[in-house]
Every structure is written in structure tokens, then in C-alpha cells.
Image (cartoon, rainbow, N blue to C red; front, side, top):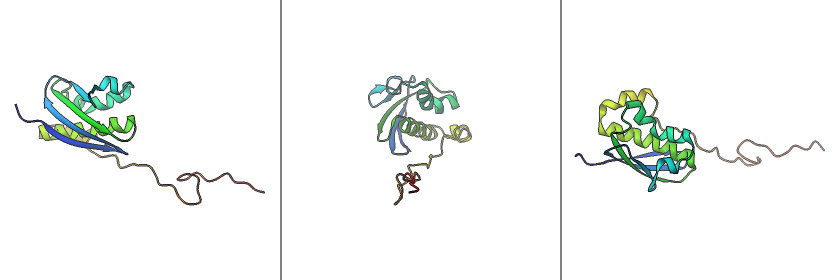
Amino acid sequence: MEKQKNTIGRRKEAVARVYINKGTGNITVNDKDYKNYFSLIYLQNQVELPFKTIEALDKFDVKVNAQGGGIKGQAEAIKLGIARALCEVNIEFRPALKAAGLLKRDPRGVERKKPGKAKARRSFQFSKR
């Protein structure tokens, strides 16, 4: 039994620390089953995506500590963390994960607010008179 691998995934303000072991397919997020933590089906699919890509849904156990951001940012941070961990476990998984675009950190974040504007781009209501 090789020792567990741990990686980090980030997205927007969310940070996910991912610990991966050989196992039976249990995914635990903040001490809850991921199906309870992410009630929306498409977020559950995001978390499963790296395993589906390499067809190993029931070969690894994953424990995740997710902090910050919202529920979607956390799901996508976990997706990146799991993909990176799988590359550490077996380098042969890399081409498939890379082709699916799972190893790229999504660089988009919240745009900063500008002076003289209500938000980043939204102007104050214009009054002609």
C-alpha cells in the first residue's frame, strides 16, 4: 500500500486540499459525503469528472478539506485537486486528463470595482437633467 498523495486545487476564492488513497470510491468533503455536501447533480458530476475520464470511479478514496468561495468554486477546486492527485498516483493518467482540460487552473476571478462606477462595469444611473 503506497502512502496517500495530497494536492491542492483552487478556483476563484475556493481552496481544496485533496488527500487520495487506493480504496473503494468514497469521496468525503469536510467530513460529509460529497453527495450530501453538493446537493446539485451537476456539481457532483464536476467532482466525479476526473475519475470518469480515466474510468476509475471506484478505485480511490478521496478526503477533501474545502474552504472559501461558494459551492460551485469549491466543486471546481476539488475537480482540479483530484486531477492533480491522479497525475501523482500514475503519470499515465496525465494525457487523458490534460485532453479533457482538467489540469488547467481556471484563472478567472472577480473583477475589481472601479472608481466612478457602481460595480466593476455597472455605471450609476444616468440622469439627463
